[in-house]
Amino acid sequence: MKKRLNLCRTSIKLVLSILILSSCSQKQNWPQFRGPENNMLPASRNLPLEWGNDKNIKWTAAFEGTGYSSPVVWGDRVIITSAVGEKVNPVPERGPVQGPPQQGGPGAQPGQMSQPGQGPQPGQMPQAGQGPQPGQPGPQPEIRDTTYKQELYRLEVICFDLNTGNEIWKKIAYRGSPKAGKNPNSTYACETPVTDGKVIVASFGMNGLFCYDMNGNLLWQKEFGPYYTQRGWGTGSSPIIYNNVVYIQFDNEENSFLAALAAATGVENWRAQREEKTTYSTPYIWKNSIRTELVTGGKTARSYDPLTGKLLWELKVGGEQVIPSPVGNKEYLYLGNPGGREIKPVFFAVKAGQDGLINDSGIIWKSEETGLGNSSPLLYDGFLYIIGNRGEITVLDPASGKVKYQKRITGIVGCWASPWAYDGKIYFTDENGVTRTFKAGETYEQLSENKLDGKFWSSVAVTGSGYIFKGTSKLYCIAQ
Image 1 (cartoon, rainbow, N blue to C red):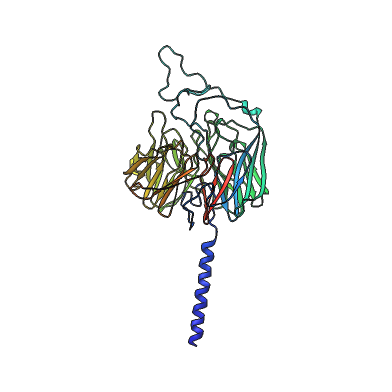
Image 2 (cartoon, rainbow, N blue to C red):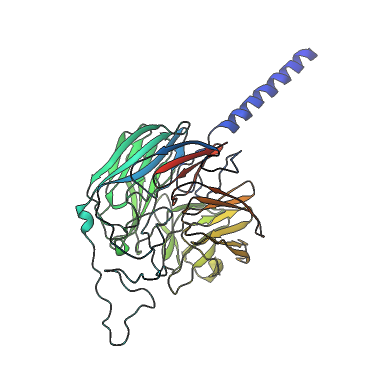
């Protein structure tokens, strides 16, 4: 009898061990921009600490065209979008620019400082501090560029095998002349696709929203425009899926709104009109201690009931570059906008449970010292991390807003991708493909640098025990 009991216990332990190992070996999905919870905190294990062009590269895969959208992963499938120019107008000569935004948008952003020899471009409205001088004429009406109507593009959704990098399928969502313009330094594939394992939803801004099944069969498509965007710079807000509903923030200069559509059919559940102009930030599902909210960025940040579209609260944020997405925990939400030529970036911590127009009583703290840029903020293990456009690191106490330290990393041209955290470390990638790692906490300690060839404006996808980096024309799977 004793032997049977021992054998039974041994069998149970063996089964449990197998289940645990099986669970640990399953690939974690990365279904949307900034990951499963939209916060760049992977649940993966055994991620590589070092990589390079000849180190820990499992596979690479080239693709046509370009796109600043980020990759998403479900199971053994990696999905990206790309815009292939078949007939493209020459890019007009201009001074140096700072590159495109992290997940879409205009390239040179509102309020960026001009580079030497780079004045306002034809058709651009003067920025703050550029008003007419005595004896000079006032601002001229904006001249809207329509030369994009002469171009021809192919907008594609592509699925790769996570294990091999082989292309599984490729679908042309749209082929023809763009329905609206973009900044010459941007692309028509800026929005990151989203999937729930049943459908894949890809947004190409004014050119349409397209839904496929996991095998690439088109299920439905929608058009919301076209409408004019700020300076004709295009779009960049990515769709998200929550509880079988697709949410799309469609802000522009003419008819801004937030829409909720049934993921399976594309039927519109509700639409909320917005008194907002062009934005590029992606909506955020905030699961706090009071309720679940759908938070949108803008010069006025707003929160909605995801089920009905009812407006819950508003916060006058101001700023210029409406690009970063919020991040939060059970009690607080952290959000803001980068500044402009003569405007400092502004950043807020908001308490859960607010209603109506938020005043000082609902704001935990406000800071103009964060250096917030295009990358979204990162909340990890008791600290708030913000990466500026040129590699400025600011670490704050999320409860008080007190700056723990600020550090400027030299030699960085631009940072557009969102930073991520793993195993007590903070990672961020600049546009030249250099990923810098520093120790999490209230003192700075750089740990490593890893380099890949190419230009990188997309945020990384993390799955299983590896990374998927998307350059302008190549995917990299990094794994040990």
